[in-house]
Image (cartoon, rainbow over the protein chains, first blue to last red):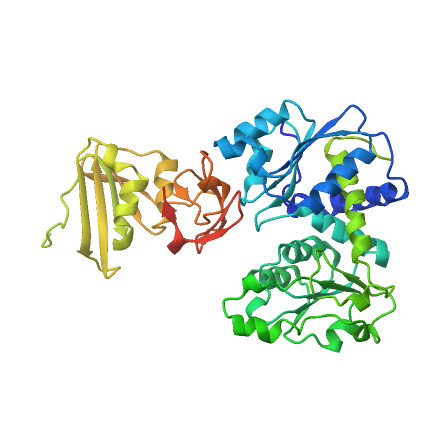
Length: 305
Length: 150
């Protein structure tokens, strides 16, 4: 039987999501536990991602496990032309679980099919990054006390933003309302609107970062507007300063509002927001570690009560 | 009869009629006809009452497996399939798109693992009526017009 892997947020049912979030909450209470003693986790980063790799490696280290792997494909045998399949089979001889980041889309699904040990997708090109989604859900759950019936305003690059698409998918079980705020060139793709329609999820679209979109929200999810995404640089110049959150803009926002961002942030959240208690993005990044502890133990069948 | 057959009749074998003219050679490739030694007649741009013009393929003494024939649905879902025995139509069939397509088409995403690793492609048919497929690996959705055969 194939081991259970986490490749796509859609691999998790509503029950799975809630089980992981409850477990992550316990890890946040007590992150240093010897649950992975004697276990080896491989972190295979064919594409560098220091932030994600450190989060996974810290998660394992704090549970008493050991980490092997590489942080850049330049130091792996893929530069010698080895197939992904061979690399995975070789590493699975040594490790009890594989965490993989790869620039090719679908690589994680394929790795999970050839690997005899569980695989966690830590990002496959522009496709999926499910542990990011789980840490977003955990942070929403933690700050709001529920995932049900929340209004979530998502701002920035809604066209290419992988975290945005997965967040819509992950939240879809919990009757959310979405406000999509994006410039014309980066508006939410039709297929995600259709997805919302079929699930009966209400949404509104804004091209301006208006007070209404901010003040109706329980969660304000900011993302980066990247220059390289624009075909028309004039258009970029026009919008680059429009989707910037300043502290003043939060004055009329809801008491329970939290501002999230998958990080790294560039200019889209002004530094003056950082001291506002509603700013939660650094805590959100920290939550990644607890969420990953929960996911790793769950896939390895380790009882983390 | 009063009407001359545009393609010679078969004694035994498989006749595929009402193929859209643009799909005829894709059907040839999907059924791997180039590898057969059987007598094969291919007609294209023939007159048709139902369609403006059409293609026909007749393969003598060959009876394909169901899964082989169903591949045709990928490029020509509305063909008429006749199984001929002793000059008579012994069986009329429709092709049915399977739930999954393995190996015979490429993923259109150059950054998909299937285009960069020696492996079989795999697609889920997510809309049978309009023929929309989704790559099992990179999750790209592909419409019928965009299908590229291996």
